[in-house]
Length: 233
Image (cartoon, rainbow, N blue to C red; front, side):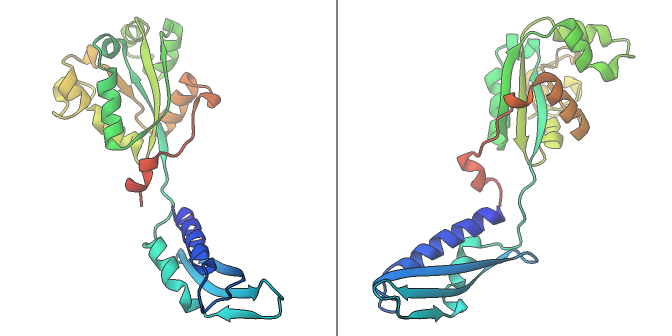
């Protein structure tokens, strides 16, 4: 975000500096030098040089203070570092698909401010489901989980955002709907633990493994949404 603000500050200040003014040459060009101070993230306009476009016979340097307010205004908060975004795997299980809850679940993640970077509809085989639930292979309910996940279409998704792994789990709610708080997906939309409609990665390592299992690298899309400037500093 700081780099984006620096770029904006540079571009805007350059346009301001290049505009015709009595104090500057009416014909010619203006060069704005901007330096970024790594320690504070501050952008400082160091100097402006104008040279004649007619005979090149003179040049003038203007003091740094002339354009310092421009950079300060554009950056606003020079101490903010770039926001670190992460990705998580979210799956709407066959019961969620069959109950027509796809748009409801996607809408909750979107309204929170998270960004969808991959999505597909797939009917997993039981063998694939076993790979997904590999960490639960020793549990007595393992076969039942695999049977259910492979019983119909699943909406597989990857969501991106700051803290999306941990907070995505909060949006989903506790594994048992009976223990889920009202306002969560499971707390509002389902009743039994065996029909809890949604899955979400429970940690960074799990997210990486599950995304790699369900999606090829080329299926993940990196892009910038217009509303990100209203979500992150």
